Length: 556
Image: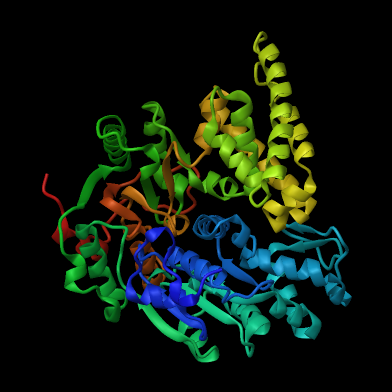
């Protein structure tokens, strides 16, 4: 433990003044708004480091972080461990809103009575038929947690006595129900809450995101409002594009001229006769980036506003024809962020691959993230023995025509070896056996799909990972991610329909994912896909969005 005045940002990082102030705040709640690339997640990690290393979060109190996405929650947890070490990071709980709600339900389930009563071992299902003691829907989690906190002072006090600090990430997407949960749990207490987000990236209004939530939070919790201005992600030319959009979204947040100084960055806007010509050109471009410029495939993203399979189908076919690895995130992203899926993939990579040190390290980090050296050594030894035994069977199987035939039997043995306690520690969602089985089934299905494309199992497993494939995803799924080069396809009126403000925010999110290169495309016509229920063959460019980039287009 160190004195407050001796604390410096971990890893020698330099924080801008408001970020440093936020990291070191000891008394007040904080409402921190920041643009894309400003380092919101890093600030929270540094704040956790400050609170834990200085004892401002007094032992045995803990820090609770609530995010909206599983991968964001995991990313923050990993950053905190890197900043302050595993021992202190063991007092940092990082959940999604739904995972936090489930923890409340599981801990205080007997409080629920009548139509809300639940049995131990209840399952989370997509849809239930009427009241049930054994099943709840995903959307029931937050409302049931609210009912528990409303009816039980013991439950409220238990949560409040566990934590000293609460982090609320991507707070601009908070819904009425989620904010009610926050207020019931923490309003009127001495706990320090830090809400972080960017109102220009509010793209979840369709899911009930609350208007003016930052102002409501600042008023309700008497929070200090701060803004982080600097963008560390994008090159100057891309910052200038973003600044033009910001001037429309939120004129008060326009970046100062000195933040836009410098050179670097590429911006293009291209028109095509039809979707097929667009796909061929982009596939050739991506092929050149990878093979000529040596740009890693994972640093390339193709974004579509919506209906990904319909708009990117031609492109995916052209990428496959050129043997360019890609991932359709419409199918893959949700399962790939599941800790159990990652565990299975890393285990199979160790079992069937030649040398997979990265997979082994990830495997160990998941299985023994906070264990002491003696426990780590024992786990390594036991797992090493299991894999050696199974690799011998794999070697024998290679003498036949089905070298990978036993993979799912091996996975079952591996999961049994790991044990339910360790699996639940990976994610509280796995306390539901049905949820864990669902993740395992989905992981198996995705791997089998990849094997149809890439028959070699290690190569198929590689395509499951984040680091070996071009990412093709919707703008909504790209939030929180960053790439060297971003292509936004089909910037057309026919796809950006509905609420203008939401669409503009979504477009800004897509543009701000790019670090170095941004490309917008549109086509004069797109043939009707077989699965399309409504489709306009004739297309028109979204003139407003193109107007933001045209002043900065690189001449070819």
